[in-house]
Image 1 (cartoon, rainbow, N blue to C red):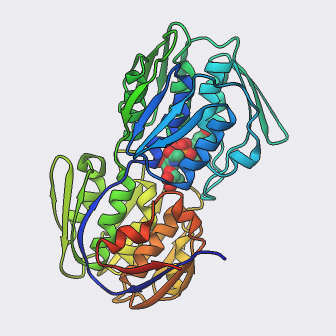
Image 2: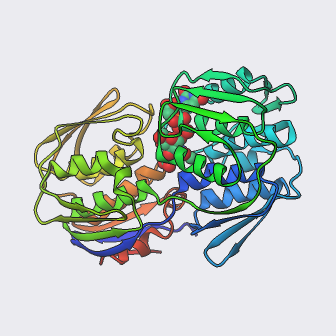
Image 3: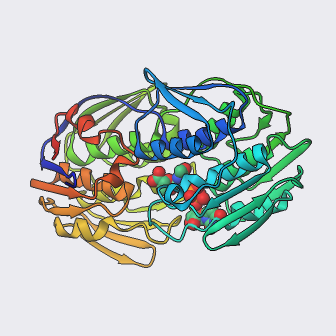
Length: 417
Ligand code: EPZ
């Protein structure tokens, strides 16, 4: 029987939440454990379906993974080559992160094209162009990538676009190549920096993450060890937008406000009161907020595409109009048709949505179309008057662990049925 979320909305949110570890940091780091020669302990594991899917792929490569309390143990010592089929890769985009580590460790990789949320075409041309620039031989046939790395060597590659995944994949492909590899026009997201910090903790020599150039000096091998993955800035931003939309007063712990400076700056332009500390954020919203006239999604440190649907919900109930432009993905307005059922007033024109704030949203039966649109619908259900049921919630479970339990901590009336 398909699970659904049912929300009785229209209540303010009050309380404190500890933010979980970051899905988008954990995923490339999990792929990176393949480069290690000994056991790795990743602390504060978060039980998400995307992470379980990545663990399944590692186990296909004979890397044993198991939980020790809240910590995930990965043992790559007996890793062995295996072809990674589409039954494993279609579950998530992050399966492509394995290309670099498999080439580095096995000198070859046979892997089906990645899957992931249908928010656009999501090509992997930059990944492949970079690997080929470093000498990899890659044949694309019948939905599979046949990759051979015995002739790979260090070098310089300028990314056509600051792709997060391509940056992370290319970083990992160069770690065991002797000599210096320079990657230019790379993504500056915090998750790229966290991956660098993890790999360096295992013995790699990488510098520059967080800037537009990353330099990797090859080493012979990586050890094992312990690492604490960063907190999830998108989950934190989702909670902040929930409280801003519903009103109330919340406190987030185990979060780095520096990772959400763009969102905090936008919310501070409305009537939200926000206080930030080194590892905490407090937000208070006690009246209907004014609209933010213009917002566009851009690579970090600008406003993140992964908070776009959630921001759309806030703007749907704010006073005034907002022009929200999505620059990263060509099909990331899936939430609009569902918000329309709830009484929102949104007009899409090309990559922009013109949102005219309404006094109220009303509960309805809605469907999640992808992970972040699903999270946005939870916010819409929380703010709407009456009952909302959300279907296809396995999308939401990809990036939020027990989202209903978290919002119950904030006194929301929400349950999984
Ligand atoms: C990562 O996806 C995140 N996923 C996404 O989060 C996030 O939305 C995205 O970065 C942007 O911040 C993970 O980290 C697992 P990109 P990724 O490569 O790496 C184009 C979520 O909700 N592109 O930076 O796939 C691409 O089509 C997910 O948690 C190419 O054209 O994003 C897109 O338009 C959704 N060719 C743009 O670049 C390539 O080879 C940004 O993609 C690669 C990307």
